[in-house]
Amino acid sequence: MLRRRIPKRDDRAIFELVEKELLPYARETAPGLRVTRPELRRRLRACTTYVELTAGRQAAGFISLRTDRERLTVDLLAVHPRHQGQGLGKRLMRYAERKAQLLKLPEIVLWVDEANERARGFYHKLGYEPVYYDRHMRCFLLTKRPAPPANGIG
Image 1 (tube, helix red, strand yellow):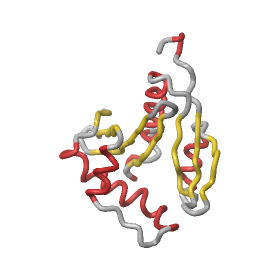
Image 2 (image 1 turned 180 degrees about the vertical axis):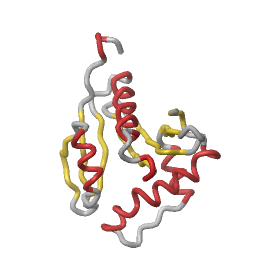
Image 3 (image 1 turned 60 degrees about the vertical axis):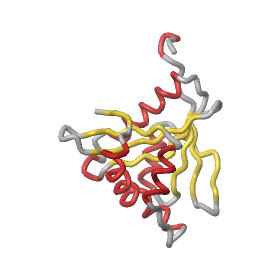
Image 4 (image 1 turned 120 degrees about the vertical axis):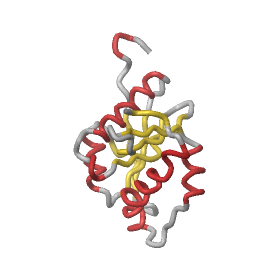
């Protein structure tokens, strides 16, 4: 079940996912990098975050989205290791793509760490293309143009 983030219920699990699944790659570039819970909460407040729950109502993964007039940005995406390889990340990204279609945004963008080869392959399979590489951050900016809504509905 996918639902919007409820901070008091979800932030602990989101923080753990960020710490275990995202920060190890970022620390390859910035070894001393730390993200505090208040910093992460501020970042999440700037986004709309959706949490995928297991049947036992545990957070299996999440996606945080930001929009402006020109694009939808996938700010954060993480899936718990127990649920990786089961299509959850793909479902979260498809949800983001449908949001972009509904909002009539012409582009979806996201950053991915150079060291995170698994994520880079995942996004490539979904049709995301690198358009920029930041040597300082050692990250790729990926982009995709969402398909137009089916039957012209939008």
